[in-house]
Amino acid sequence: MTFSMYQASVPALIKAMTNLSAIIDKAVAYGEANKIKPEVMIGYRLHPNMLPFSAQVQIASDMAKNFASRVSGTEVPKFPDTEVTFDDLKARIAKTVAHLKSFTPAQIDGTEDKEITFKVGGEDRTFKGGTYLTTWVLPNFYFHVTTAYAILRHCGVPIGKGDFLGA
Image (tube, rainbow, N blue to C red; front, side, top):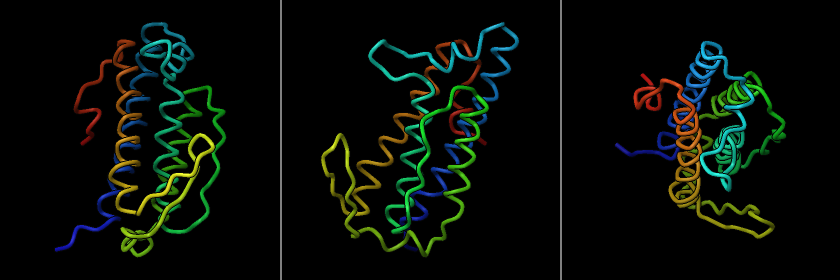
């Protein structure tokens, strides 16, 4: 049995984004119970030179939606980074998941050797589809999802590995 580009990406991206939404629910409940203003957690950083929680969610979303669009050759949706509430962030996650669910395996499979070019910091980056997935998208995606999790955990939200991995 062949393991496909679709199987290696879309279901995992959907699951992680869904889990991220669930830990936001726990952050909301924890904040309400402990009288922590949402903007404190949303703007929290693990270190002054790191991006805040909101940016971690935004970048994870971008990695997921951009991947599926780029390898399938469809237009990359633009999500402006304007989320300032947990509801805003959950809505962005929901849009990302809906976007990912709109793709079929036929649109993603067979793109291992497709050339993908995009700009990073004003410079072109070019990858083959499989390399793009394994050395750019997944490491970046999981870095930002993990950092978002770590920020909430550092703020005291009672989440654990099971929340990160999901059911």
